[in-house]
Length: 340
Figure 1: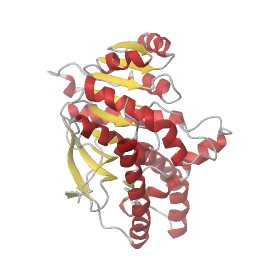
Figure 2 (figure 1 turned 180 degrees about the vertical axis):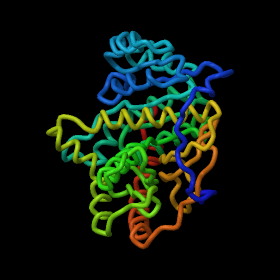
Figure 3 (figure 1 turned 90 degrees about the horizontal axis):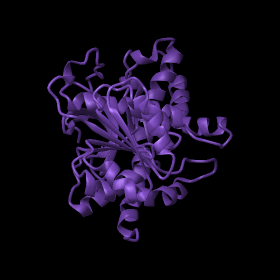
Figure 4 (figure 1 turned 90 degrees about the vertical axis):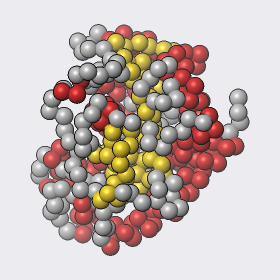
């Protein structure tokens, strides 16, 4: 169970007080040459508190590093290319953001996507276990519901798994919820605060409109319509791009926002709440996306789920078996993957 009820709001940073008397902070991005990785690298250069940015991919990262390294922001940027430079890129990292992998294309099932990306996730996780075993890990590679449990098993096998330091980034679901609700209510999306729980696939995403701040203005039909759009927003982008890409830019934005929260919390800012897919204490569901308070070592507190209305409870009951199946698939993938 989560320990405290969800009542806190995300605390924005209005000053850089926390930059004083701190140690150097290194962020490594694996997959930095891709559709998410490149815009994410740009956005990360604008975050205070990153002293070293290490960019890795199979190709193209030398150019990305040179390009982003010319931006007039503090910190250094270095590029690493190929499997042989993966461990050097990760060495000593405080935070690793994993964006490597194939994007989803029209008609691709999550199982097919896992076959494409699961091996990549295992290779990267093994390298992290060797090069930076105490790092915070933020995974955006899909399918997150399956990849994160896979990564956890690899870290367990290496003896370095810390459930408070492994995150599946589901911030995009919150970002979309804020935007769609803000537009519906004709208010600034940044003023909308809503938890999104469950997982990070359409059937497992559950925005809690009953907990929306400010209070949601709309009827049941509006909630059902917006919930459906939030769940299927990824497909909406894939179709709008004609199958030539997925939600890369919005995912980069959301991941950058999550990284900023991790760094703020690491440097002592209190009251930072984010929703993320993490190892949980929920009965029969070892991983779950829910509200967390972040701290210096990753997860400071698991916040208890609020009281749900009838629609939300039915939706939760429906998604849990799907989520459980996803998690089991991830664990089995790690256990049966050919060791190299």
